[in-house]
Length: 450
Figure (cartoon, rainbow, N blue to C red):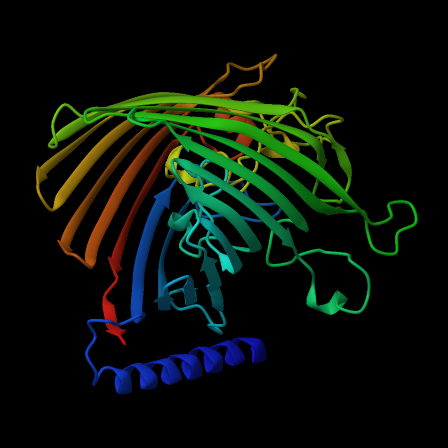
C-alpha cells in the first residue's frame, strides 16, 4: 500500500507541476509550441453472467453451476510529447463490485521514449506490448486488468522496415539483497529477450514479420538440495504474414516452441510444440463482411484418465502443448477463452483445432454486429474418445454513442461433447451459456501546448 500511495503522490505532483508550467506558457502564442501535455480517463464497467461448463468442486465441496458479477476498471493517464521525447503514465484500478479491501491500484503503464530523426529509438519502463495480430504478444485488454511488461525496447523504424529488440529482467523485492530467485512476481517470467522484424513491401499491400523470443523461468525450489534453483529457458520463433486490399484481407502465422518448460511444482522438461493459423476476411462493401479461418495448436501425448480424474497430476516427459504465451487469446480461440484460461484435468493439454466462419454487418453508422460459429476439437489423437470438443456460437454487437462512449455486448452458446466433459471435468456436455457487456467511457480531460 505504501508503494501505491507513493505512485499516486508522484503522479499527482508531476501532473501539477507540468500543468502549472503549461498554464503560464499558454499566455504566449501557441503557434510555435514545442511541448504538448494531455490528460485522459478510461472507465470500463463490465458485467458477466454464465451457466454450465464450470469445473467440478473439490471432493466434499459443492459448486453452483452459474456465476454473475460486475467489474469496474478506472484508468487515469497523462501524456507528454515534444520533438524526440515522449512520456506516458497510466494508473489503473480494477475491482469486482462489492469486493472488500479495494487494494487493486497499480501502475499499468509508465515509460519514456526517445526518438532520433534517423528512425532510431529507445524506450524504457512498463509498456503494454502489442505485435502483429497480438497472437503471441498483446495486452489482452478484454481481461480488464490487461497485461504490461517491464522492459527496455530499442529499435529502428523507417522506409518500410521495423526492427525491435526487447530486454527484460525481473526480480522479487524481498530478494533485493539475496540472490536471483524469482517466484510469484508481477511478471510471468524471470527474464526475456525478444527480436522482432517487420517489412512492408513497397507499392504492394503485403507485410511480413519474424519473431524470436528467449524466455527464462525460475525452476527448482529455494533451499531444496534435491531440486535446487535454476533458470530454464524456452524459445519461441516464427512469423506472420498479412495481405490486405480494400475488400480482402489474408493473414497467416506459424510458430514453434523449443527449450524447456517449468511446471507448477518447479520441475522442468523439454518442449516440442508448434502452431499454425490462416484467416480470410472479405468485405464486399462497408456495410457487411465475412470471415473464415483455421487454427491448429499442438497438444501433449494422451494419457487416458477415468471420469473424475482419479489418477492425479500426469507429468509429461516432453511438453507437446503449444502455449500462446502473452497474446490476446480472446481474439482467436473464442472470446470465452475456455481452452487456455482454465486448465484441463491432470495437467493434460490436448491442443486445439479451431475452425470458424462468421458474418458481420453495420446496420447503421454507430452499430456493428457479428455472428461467428466455431468448430472445436483436440489436436491430440485420443484413444478412447472422439476429438470433437464441441460447437460454439458467438454473437456480438457494439454501439458508439459518441467518440468517447461505447457499449459492447456479447453472448456465447457452447454445446460440449463427452470429450469436453471428460477432459475438463466440468459437466461441459451441458449447454454452456455466457453473456457479457462492457461500457467504455474514455474522455480526453485536457490538452495543452506551450
